[in-house]
Amino acid sequence: MPVIKTKVVTERPKNRAGTLLSAETAPLLRGDGDISHECGGCGTVLIADVAEGDIISFYVLCPQCRAISLIDNPGAKLL
Image (cartoon, rainbow, N blue to C red; front, side):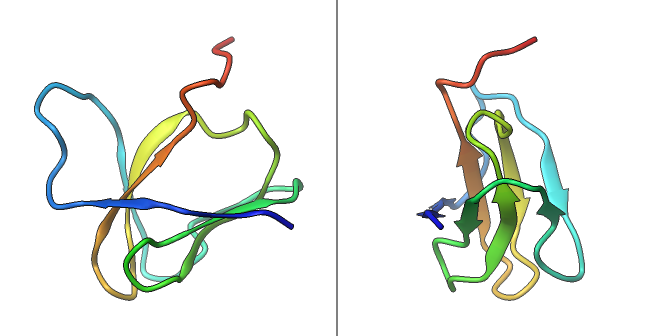
């Protein structure tokens, strides 16, 4: 199972739109694929078991360390 370590950002860039997801527990989202995304700060699994192309681009507030991670897949196809 591939694990992708996210990029932690200190703040959302002003020139980039994106939704910020936050929850009290992790993972915040779970799918039926084989790719997981973990916090670049503490290693907590934020997004679990998604398929390639399921994730577009958004920010996640880690419930453990409170770091903001960028979950990004610039190659994803929009429907």
